[in-house]
Structures are given as C-alpha cells and as structure tokens.
Image (cartoon, rainbow, N blue to C red):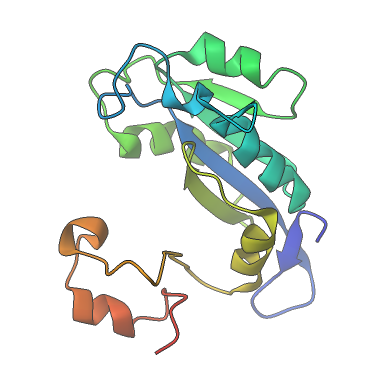
Length: 166
C-alpha cells in the first residue's frame, strides 16, 4: 500500500491522512510524563504507532499535541509529522483537538483518526484502509459497553461500521 486507497466510485486514488490525538493530560495513567512516552520494548508507545502508520503507507500524519508537547515532538524527531498544538488542552476535549486538525485534511482524502496511546500493527491499518465508508475497529473478544460506543449496543452491532462478523 502506498499511502493511497481507491475512491468510492472510480479508479482515482485519494490521499490517506492520519490524525493522531496526542494532547491529553494523562489523568488516568498518573504521573507527570505523558503515557505516550512510556517505553514498550525500548520504544515509546507513540513511536510504535507512527512507525505502524508509515509501514502501512501513510505519509500524511497530523498529530495534535498538548500536554508534554515538546517531549512528544522530541521523541518523534526525524519522523515526517505535522504537529498542531492544542494550547487549551487542559480545558478542552478531543473534539476540539480534532477541529484544529480537520481543516488541514483535503476534501477528497481518506482519513484515519486514532488516539496516540495505542499500538496497532501496520497490517491492521492496511486492512482498515481497504474498507469503504466508516469503520470502527474493536476487539471482538471484549463485549462493547454503551459507555465504549456511546449508542445502543444492538444497533451498533448491526451497522456496517463494525469489523465484527456476525
């Protein structure tokens, strides 16, 4: 995959962009350093994610940073990433961070929106990009709760947004 995916109704290729949400305050994880900088196998979590995005062919990465912004930027030095600062991260939620990045996404682009504190294999990212329309990947071994998905569970399992096979 070369960072592009087929358009819905034609053979033209649309650019693929990833917005990485990395501005959170780390309140549930505790400590003063961002959990994104926690090392797993000698590498920060955020670097695992960025490497997977690059390995999946995504070259257009926009990362919204806030808490520990300078440390995150330093940890990703040399990576091809556009950083946007959410200077109001202490008083805002993810939707505000998304609103800072969204104007930088072309209208015809395919968008992958992800939190910065997950490790996702590039193979999984490539599979997600193969789907047309909206996709909400999740672990089928974990039963989603209404809190997890914010809507009625039965309705959610019937929508085309799920990767789960019934």
